[in-house]
Amino acid sequence: MTEPPSRRLLALLAVIAVVSGALAVAAAPAAGTPAVREPAGIDDVRYVGAGSAPVGDGLTLWREGDHAFAVSVTADDPGRYEVCLDAGPPDANRSTTVGCSTERVNGTANVTVAVDGWPANATGSQVLTARVSEAGSNATLATADLDLRVLARDGDADGDGLPNEREVDLGTDPFTADTDGDGLADGAEVNTHGTDPLVADTDGDGLADGIELDTYGSNPTATDTDDDGLADGAEVNEHGTDPTNPDTDGDNLADGAEVTEYGTSPTVADTDGDGLADGAEVNVHGTDPTSPDTDGDGLSDAAEVNEYGTNPNARDTDGDDLADGEEVNAHGTDPTDPDSDDDGTPDGVEVRAGTDPSGGGDAADGSTFGRLPVEPASAAALLVVAALAAAGVAAAVRRWRRRTAADPIPAGGDAAVPDERAASPAEPNEPAAATAAPDDEADGESTHPGRADVAAVGGDDDGDPTPSNATGTAWAADDADERTEPAPATPAAEGSAPSPTEPVAGGDDPSADGSPSPDDGESAVAVYDRLSDEERILRALEDNGGHLPQSRIVEETGWSKSKVSRVLSRMDEAGSLHKIALGRQNLIALPDSVPEAARRRDEFDGPADRP
Figure 1 (cartoon, helix red, strand yellow):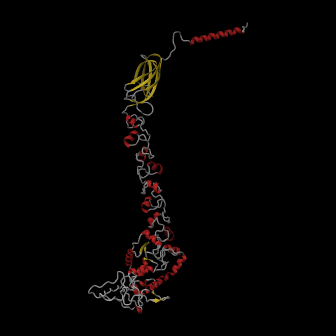
Figure 2 (cartoon, one colour; figure 1 turned 120 degrees about the horizontal axis):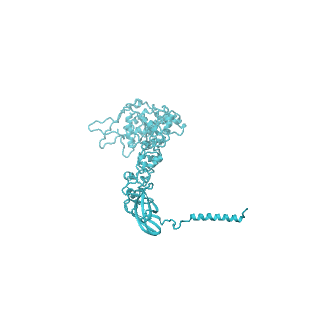
């Protein structure tokens, strides 16, 4: 028979009630046993002593100090509680009790625990553990930890050579051997090198102290160890130079000067590769060490100095209007001689005239064209001058005859000659010398010793007498410089009338300009023979445009080279003319007739001093 649903529902509810009751009985505590709870706990631990050390973050204590800690304890059950402190390394399972204190706690209280003498073996990094228990019980109710470090004042925790207390005073880290990380231990920086253990680059030169000492050997306390004008760091990091050597490339220029003043390479002795060291260019030759050809003449500076003897700062060393390189590379001429072939024509003039400046014989010997160191206006002008060269001497003789004919010498005597050969009174008791030489020039014979080369004077198309030797040697004396000196004049008796050769007071002196003049019956040769040495040279210069090469004056006078040199030097010192060095020869010029090119040369090289 089937039970009704209501009865089945009631049975299920009864089962559920029985199970629930059983579970409640199992969960309920036994009668008379209270629930377990902790009567006290620790809120925090603080250091309240006077032995802490100011070292970085965290708590650091001197081992030798007096220490105390405040432990905050909260007790639900009033009573006496004991608080103890244990210390030990953080990674060890052992610890040492450093102090305990017992107090009555009702609610919350700070229990102060004093530490009398920290254990010697409890230094370095430590973990301080505070634990609380009921007085008289060994059961720990609660704990709390505090990290700290302990130092002995005279110890060296990091082994860097500085005592802990000294490191604290200096501000370095007593637990880090190299506080600034520069590669040097703090003790070495302080005790040995004098560097700052808190600054990695003591001198601020861009190199760390340790790198300066260990790698480059430079001074970590001096910005520029070698005093070359470049900081050590710049030498190493930028220029690749040696910070301990002021002249890295050994070219006699300091590294700093090369970088900041001359723009040269401090690691290359010859920056421009011209064969001269940078220092020699700057200090000896005055050339540009960054340009292989300072004067732009087509020759390298070294070639000019070592091979050709030219001036590396002057495009045209000899002033012949040809650049030194052009002379060497194009024409084969001597860049130190304005007239390489000694033909009397400067090299530049020959090149522009189309002649060979190295072969000689291009200009007419003795011509003005071959002597003047000036550039003609054009090639056509050069040809005209060359064509007229052969007539140069004849024109000079004609000018001489016209000038001497304008001032006749009074008959009966010679005009006074104001030079070193002038006549002087005879010594007492000495017979007077003859005052006149026989005049037998009327028949065409010369009476002047050493003048066999002088021909009879004939006439030319304008009626002026012209010497037969057109090279100018008609006026020359013999090479021995021996000639008949004028006879000394006999002094006139006191009160006697003046001789015909003496100037009359109040009258005109025929030789007032210091030069003798011919009378109607006297030849030009005789007049020229009575000129002083100085007057002969001045006449030669005047007849040739005011300037001549010294070799030409030797030809004009017929004197020896040594005598010409002596007379010219004497006149140069007196200011009557100028001697100017042009290559291997001298140019002789009147003061107002010095060619511009020669004037520049004279200013550059100074007056000539060659014989």
